[in-house]
Length: 87
Image 1 (cartoon, rainbow, N blue to C red):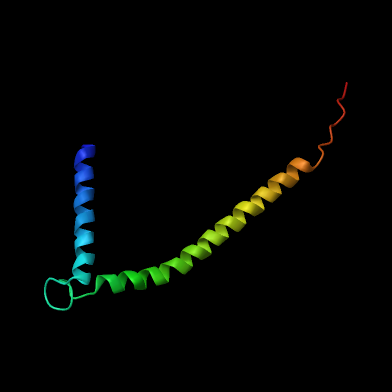
Image 2: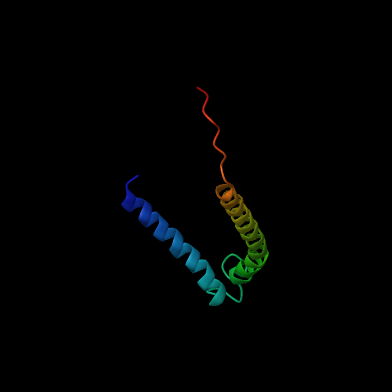
């Protein structure tokens, strides 16, 4: 597919997603959105569940990265003993 077609498809997806959230804020039919689900409340629920997990994973990544950095720095600080050449 051409890149322009992919961009247009992506924009259509964005507009559909925004339409679902706008419908949950300003419902077109009754008090609940078209799908019978308040999408904004669902988004808040998902974010409330995902953010702690992402923070844990980010923390683990930072600890792993810095531990590896300290390990590498320690290896460079140690003097390397040269072996005498045999003749």
